Length: 356
Image 1 (cartoon, rainbow, N blue to C red):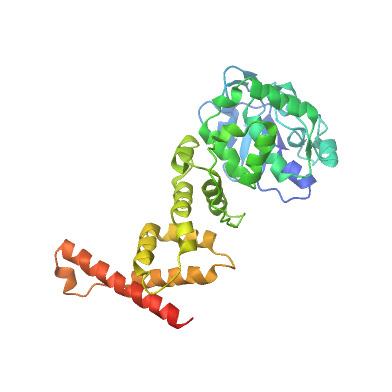
Image 2: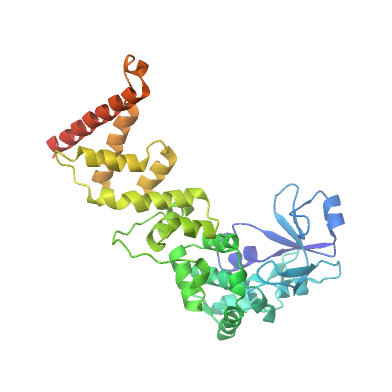
């Protein structure tokens, strides 16, 4: 049994980046031996194991044979005789097919180091065209390493995948995961368009409202929610197809429903009903979503307007019914609350105008 560090950790180190995670391949072992050493298997039929102390992934060296459609349409051979080179040969790009042994020696049978030096994205073998997910991974790596060039031979392999209709068999979850992993979903979509595969995202483009946001690109929730809001016509349908978590869908929908209303609102004497209506749509009970909404929406130009809304919402949150009002029937309590909110809105606008 021999263990090798593989893939992204070596690639990133050679490029001068701090590796985010480490993956390992194990040669000459078996599921039984891995389990006997305390490793926990990921799934019943998948040859990947979790280290009992580090939590890092250790995969048995394997070969693959195409047996069906899509990303999961493969049969694995994890026999203990499978070599390291055979395992590396099944990987997508040469820059990801480099291994390192326990002594720090690099094993690079497909010249990944040369492609890193020459800034090339190149497929490892003809097996590249058997896996449609590799088109998305290629787009993701092109976004991350924007000064790299996809070699013509690999573009030919992408064309083979597209012509085979294999992209139609990718699940929404796998598409979402690649978009989530990308450094920039706008550029990820652009690269897929260049490759002729943008339809895999199932995006029915919307007409821009002209109001662009500048989300924190290190915050996945902010970045992807803004992308969905700006690029997708039917947000709910898109999120269902790609199985996107609700927090992304909800924030994108809130941006869709309320951003323009806040942008267009001007505090004037008789605008209190409009103010209340906008705040109702924000749903101030969902505090985390509201916090994310304002973080995404706020910029140097609209800080004053954001403060206007946030300070009004704070007044609404601080409002409490009088003791005698809490004893009234529900319909009467509702009327008291609505009247009190109108008064708060009128006073808030008056205070704002007085300070101008």
